[in-house]
Image (cartoon, rainbow, N blue to C red):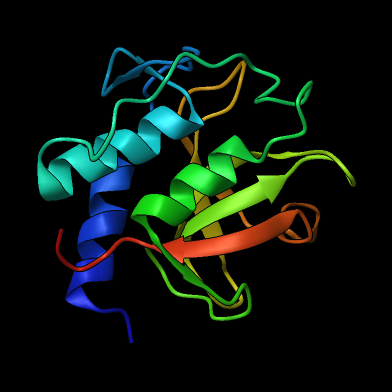
Length: 148
């Protein structure tokens, strides 16, 4: 059963569907990237963001080998086992084996019809099936705290 809190997270993420992709942006309806989507949902749930996102390139610190996105998620979201699926979870993806984790999404549905909401280059925010190719790229799962 999906909690009221999880329903709020998913409903807010779905409000962003159709927002064009724009690197480093976080403005519903105008432009966002995957991190911007998470930041926008955070603002709706809690108000101000817990820290300012620094400028970042699309390679997400690959040159330095630093898991910047994973580290930031761990500072503000609650880590949970990858196998503990729940709607409203923040999913962190590693797009290539051995590469840094650099894509985020929000689980919309779990189970047989699993889906997630995300923004990625060349696309507006969409709700995509959480198919096996996407699912096997998940390296971490977090949940929004129920208060901040």
